[in-house]
Image (cartoon, rainbow, N blue to C red; front, top):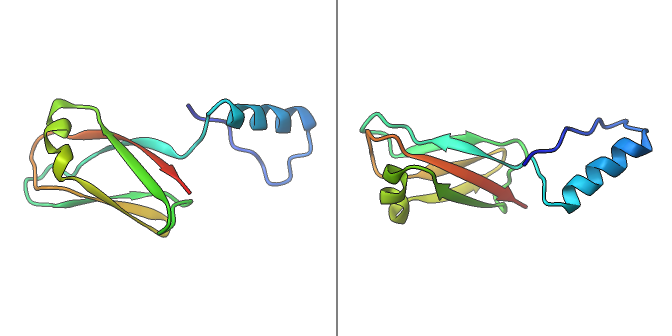
Length: 102
């Protein structure tokens, strides 16, 4: 679940309360979906995420049966403003949901 972005100079107290309440209810903007590069030769897929750092924790969940079959050999390396998913070369459609914290 996502929340609407908050402007840096927001002054409306109702908007601020709504955004804080949404965070308290578990909504966040640090999640998404990615399909691995499926050209049969690439072994990494990069996801750009401006709030990611090398100390972030990124979790992925397979959303297709092909993704689930590869899950044991997939790992994620966070970096500044991105994370890289390392995986076996595949030509199958392997889609994952991801969530980033920290």
